Length: 422
Image (cartoon, rainbow, N blue to C red; front, side):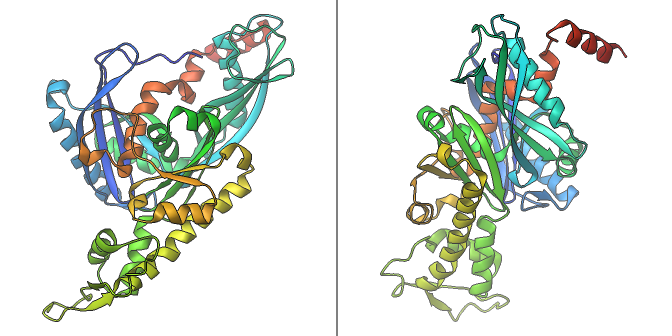
């Protein structure tokens, strides 16, 4: 099934609604292959969102409006005075489920066409339809023709039966409705949905990593998403409702300081692993509720690191357990890419290698050119990946597949006609 790139000159926009920040990128397609340039960015601290869930519609709506407005202002020339209408948004991994299914369709000795692949995908979607879950991704992983497995590209090959292994990602309807309500209240339409960890992987991974097998761990403010790639596609995703904000809360409690000061201490002096100098280095910890800061309250840096390290170890151990339970261990390979805002703490790579027993590298959006320095870090991996998803992989959108599928044999054509006309 060939992906059709957006026409040259089209405006595409990504809205990443996270627990710690809301970010919006507006881009314009610059050629017929679907390449784009980012023209406007907006981001601000998140409100009304906790651990990937909407907890206050009005606050979330305000944060979304302000972020989109900032991006629109920066991209005003390209927008020609028109407001943004459609966005692709992320779906936090805590609201999604990963299902791997196999389906087969008859091809009656003919060559496999795009439509045969679509029929297989549509069949998987029809079998997966449930009232409490919305289908987000339909990703064909591998193909088999008449028992010959490991086929990556079946189009044009002859056979009688085409079997497809498909990765389906579904989302909880209630959670998606709350997010959709915030978007609609901001006078925007949702053009597409993409799971957060998948988007982060699309922007951070090089092609060989996607092909040979790797795991993306996207550490956000309230959610840590996990995505496993193999054979160029995502084959598994999961999430843990723990992230950087939990580290900040631990610091605030452990050092009896405010959340604002705890975040500052984490960013300035935090580390994921202890060093020999920590005991001798003193940091000033403002005490909660005390106005008079004339008496500095010093604490050794080792106390701060001693609070941060256990929480990060817990997140990595939970990720390791999820991967072990998933059954995709072999495909996940020996490589892990850590990304997301909470992955920026010094020493996290070393801690990751120790806990996960794999090769670890830090990921940032490497597949988008021309991003400003301020939005080119791990914290914006998901936002960048949303643009890449809509420009490169929109053929994995369930609605797109259903809109384009044509029935195969005569009986399927009759059923299709009845469904369309009755």
